[in-house]
Image (tube, rainbow, N blue to C red; front, side, top):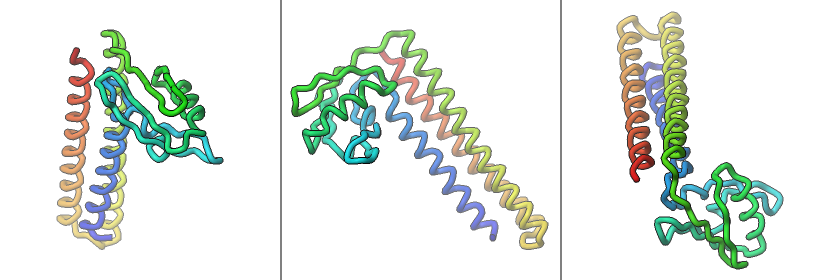
Length: 186
């Protein structure tokens, strides 16, 4: 594998880690209603677990309200049950056709807990990025040992991998900062 292929694969893996972090942040409650809060909940229906966004139209017509309109009204109870059993701590109101979820404002203590949770999540993702770097460096060392890369090529490749690592860690820190500000804003 050439140094370019190693760098390309490393970049792809690191970008995937960033995307996962962004998806996880969407599902963290901020005190504002967003469809991302519930869209990835897995609903048990039709004999399998299906993401809510594939089963219903999800909207946030107001800052403190999420409205879910299932495509099939027969799964309304399954959706309600899943939302109530989730760790989101939300209650549902249903009229038999749509589910309304009022989003209560967060207390100061709860906001601090959520920011701490996001910091932990960010650190876990930074560790994933560093593990990807370690894997890439091992690969570069192996290629150098097998005489497929020169010492200079290996050194340049490692520098590029380190640059990718630094850039992605900076992006993770920026995501943490943005989400923390959003949550702590009263």
